[in-house]
Image 1 (cartoon, rainbow, N blue to C red):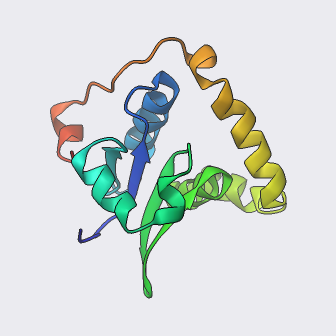
Image 2 (cartoon, rainbow, N blue to C red):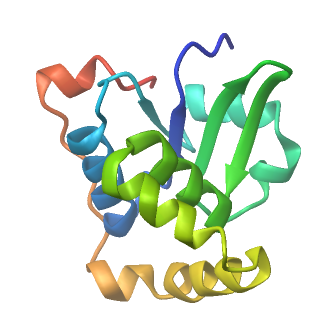
Amino acid sequence: MSLEAPVLLYDGDCAFCARSVRFLLEHDPDGTARVAAREGPAGRALLAGHPDARSADSLVWVERRTTGARALVRYRALLAIGRYLGGGWRVLAAFGRAIPPSIGDHAYDVIARHRRRLAGPGACVVFTPAERRRVLD
């Protein structure tokens, strides 16, 4: 799959993940990031090229690099999204780099384990027509 813009892969049955998707779409400064459910055809195709990300129970941020696409999971994905969003989020991500990845991943895992209780029952994202153009499924 050709990757022109970064893609956020998310759990399509998770309300917490749906809120993360909504946040990205609303705060994306260029309006270029794409989203796809991990379970959908585009999500599965992107994950096929990144075996390490395929097994992670995490948001996955896939971005193009000069050496090819890379997939970031858990805490590293959050930092990359912050850098992408720019402004105060970029500053927060810069401070977040001071936290060792093992500690950041542990905090991510604690929240991920309880995400269904934190956000309530699963809810799919209802996209506006403008947002729908940014969905890969």
